Image (tube, rainbow, N blue to C red; front, side, top):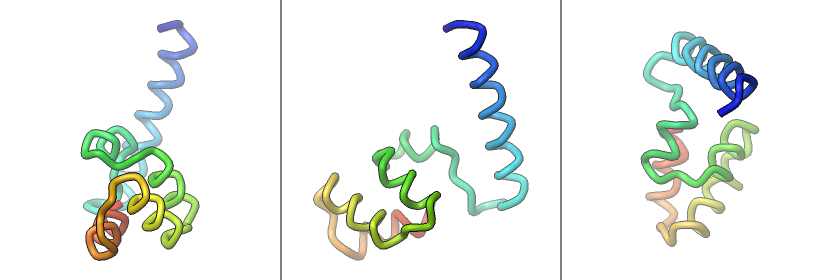
Length: 76
């Protein structure tokens, strides 16, 4: 990693810590979401406020049913 990568990572970690403080128990960091198997595109859609598209994207990527996909998206 370069120095710029390290700086960007440190800033991202700081921003995510701030968001977790603002939304205790509700904010899931990008690293946590991808670790539990949520595709990055789904995370992007949720953060953009497009919940329906996120549910569809999760279903397309994983083959999950509607209820399961909704539960996952609601947890983000």
